[in-house]
Image (cartoon, rainbow, N blue to C red; front, side):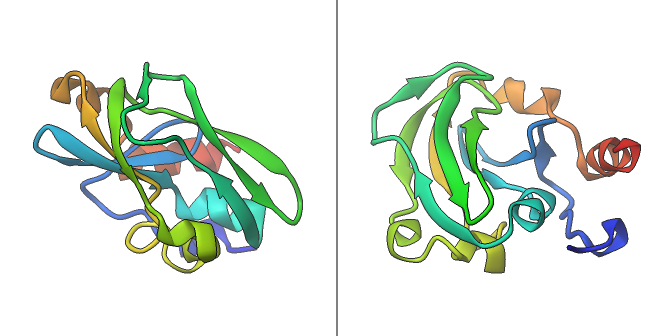
Length: 133
């Protein structure tokens, strides 16, 4: 596993305590799991994601990620409607391990309220959370 200082935490993303990130793009956002989360899970074997049009509230479970170690729920960082799921993850779920912020994104959503993204932790606050253990 990586040392905390080796975890990649790009600026400009919002993070949840459940290790989900959000990249806001106007009224839409990309969502995935953090480098820390994928590192803790180990090699990802399967990801179950919702269909286009599904709506979730903030904190709702929207899918699962299965690694060789465990199956873990994924929680929506903000309320929104799924526009698309990353279809490449069906064939190659390890994209989340290789590139959690670029190729390994999970969902593109339309936010119910774009201002909700401001409630998420920035990379510095998320790193502080990780340091607390």
